[in-house]
Image (cartoon, rainbow, N blue to C red; front, side):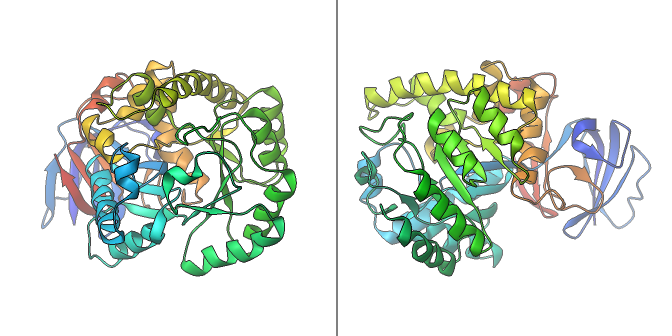
Length: 398
């Protein structure tokens, strides 16, 4: 048994407890009690005094790529399978250190996400909880060759059922599909529609038949509209949302959400990288990031579910802790909104809100202790969490 005493709680991220100071009792993998500060029974329990630090649910990154070691794509694509897998395992551990207790890997080669997920679940390596796709299904498009064999290219709706069956047979949790061009595909145009309504419907139909869903890479307005109309569950990036996009999402009777990804675009247009980045990527990122901020504001105001993604490589992730929080804050997003998107909103999007996403008795003890009050001052997120817990076990003490 473990007791975290003298914790500061944020009411909007806490369930079943009304006070802002608490002692939290962890028994095994779960939160067993949330008690007024000073009232927990500490006998035969390990005790950590939070000294007023803020206790948050573990963070989610719903648009991760464990394969991204850095932005040197040529070197990255020349890695052998073993090196590629080891790099992915290392990144899974880095995520935990930074407070991300759950990630969703949105595309990897060699089905590395499945291998890392299995290794973490078996206790072979220490890492975040992983939800993973496999190869990225895509029409033939400009820049796909930049990423070696990452893409499963097809221009035939008739092939979708076979491809999706093949991915599911490998053990993926969801399907990733390209609807528009990409910022980081050389020659790609983010707003350009690269597929057809028939192809989108074919991939979502195949996924539904096999009990899963499709996350769509989708920057452009027309692509977003087609994706929403044809059953896509999550709109990744969602850079160029307009009023009609929002109306279409609100009309859907099933779960649909947008997953913006500020970090990668922010690092590019702020020129935080040290060489090796094409000017083309910088210009596309600047435009996408500015529009993404407007899109998020529209979705939040209308009541469309918005999640948390970074799309960031390990080098930048380690170099700039809390970058997604900082970027969204700089683009005008309220602090509490960011904290909700990184926790409970994202838990709802992946249908794990009964297990994670808030501080609540009976949920997994996926928790982070932050030195400071991020709901009041987001700059505290530039520092690593003091403690990270994943399913009741201490994952990091920074």
